[in-house]
Image (cartoon, rainbow, N blue to C red):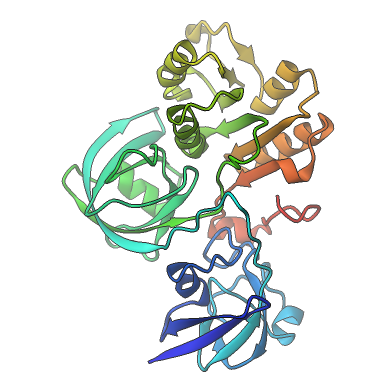
Length: 353
């Protein structure tokens, strides 16, 4: 059994299978409703139901308050139709977004390596080429782990049939613990993608600032490789934040890119280097490195941020104090169920970040 869901004001109707969420059906049919976390904790995919019956699913009370439920608002990532429906959604269209369909893939683990003491690099061979934009992510189903987990794609879209992931071990996290302690080369996994609307606005030829922390480097790495492979001549800056030298992974890749491309600039920052690191680079947090490098004058650039929510919040504040506007700042942050329980969400001040 399936139901028809009409999305206003664009007037598009999608088919939603029984026990399928509105968001999943929309993405698989090329309709990119706004979303971020994908599991009911951030509220980005909130839509208004104007007709029909539905199951709210497991929407967090922080993301969907009681009064909103009474007003027939739902989270598209959790809501499952129980009849034909009509919803109202704020669907943004961006000329640089390619909108590749979400599909399911079979993946085989072909390489596992330690990128840092806390981050594993996983390379997957998938059963057919996946079209994706640099900056997007995939959902992975791991054995005996309830639900899927989202991980950003780290390789260039030009590397066909391969998905590279950077996965940090989260204390108490069942999925990341499995990856670090149990996943083996040769294992097969179910994945789906691509997801996300974190991508470079290539039609805007201004310089690009990437700010990355921890395993948040994966998306910027993919985006930088994609830009340089395409022969981009605009100035590209990567600010990579880490605690110490062992955590500053893939440093050699970016140092080599600096040698090969005059327009690429790499500025790593360590906030707690050890004496044995013999660190001579910038010491401090990554947002402080940005302020120092640009002397608090970032206007004339687009900025892309990926990392832990506290890092992103600090970077947004720095960029805006450095004369960069909201429309020129793009972020990607994954929110866990714990984040939702703590009230973490998108910025309350800005529409897009």
